[in-house]
Length: 318
Length: 259
Image (cartoon, rainbow over all chains, first blue to last red; front, side):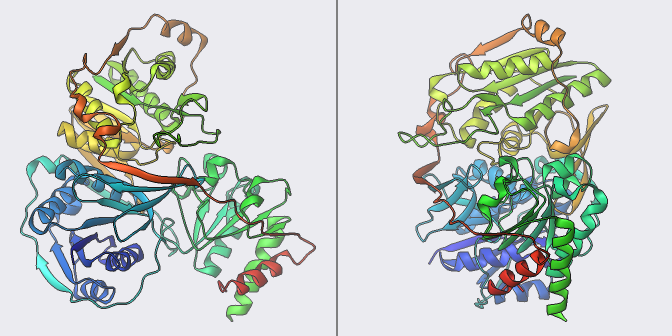
């Protein structure tokens, strides 16, 4: 059974949920091998990766992997691929993940597929394109399939693997050290999950009517343990920070549950959330196109509906 | 400073996009073409940089005949010159082939800075800037929400999942920009008139010295085996709020086991 490399996404040493999803997906394709890139590797991380199926864990914990943009990671994965000839490489479909995939494709003369939502046993990938309106099956025809997979595409399953640690000897070349990270700023996000991989996203749009209006959106998000998103109308108006924009020029999310509040549902926004599994809509305009996507919708004022919803959820939790 | 801005003509953002039944490529005839929105931010940033530091901006595109409109738009915003790579053999090029063609055209003209929009609204892969940096062997400073040039250094704020990183690199370098970076200008009437007199170099792949074996559908390292429209979503339940809208949502969420 061929090795399937899974590039680990981590935050200060904590393995992200999307990596557990990719390990579960990898187990359906071959023998999962996690690839840890950067400082912060620990017994806890090893235990988590093993618990979710990693038979091998390639560890390269050089600080240089975090100190320079993308290129060292692509180089290190290429070095591992030269040694092990994996069946495929799975990478989370984040901004950086896709960049790693792109550079790796050139280095290893391999085809790359981004934003897959499923991968079959023959490595045919399913993609949802044009804002979710078209479903495409595609396959890599040259080299090793390099596939980036959207968060929330697979439910992670506990399935312990062998978890054998393999240290990677490769060092980072000077050529890969062109873009140096000199500072890191973490935006406050109130302990909420990351937007791209959150299971539940609560979003606000033009109907929220101002920065202070996002208080009710955040309160609902916190009652559900959800991430907060915003439409472009809201971020352009400066009501909510730009990095939380969901849509064609912002982030694409595919959560289990998406709650759209005061969002009309222009194609710009739908392109970023159309593949959400369940959609709930609150909007005072019954003609808003977002209702076409709703599994459940309420025509009404979000400032009365949303607080009532939050209160009711809190009551049930109590 | 010599800056290149790579722009792409894409189907109008508001139009419905479809794949062609014959070769599974995007049907570009079916909708009006516009400059990819994020590329307008790239053009704007280039113009601001030369307004501050001096130099010239060359806009580079690859695409069919009518992509010349997109070059013209960038010139009317204020770019100085254009390069349009156009050839039937480019049709169906994937990101790898596109990055090869762009890198060759850029390398032949030695720019200090190459600026891209971070993503196109049609393919949305977001990989071409990184690929071009890889091929040119120059630093990649991508997903910039702020760009400064300081002597021979370029410094950016790179947007990340958690906030942003400060990143610096020596010139030459490849930059991509996100929407937060600026507010693109509209072409003025004077700009539109001036654009008609600005030089645009139209290149075939042979003119550019490209290897035909690395271009087009046949050179693609991936293949689309099938595609279909997403089945329309079954109509959901929509109710009017009569004072219990929030409670009704909780009822639904409970049935769906979210609460």
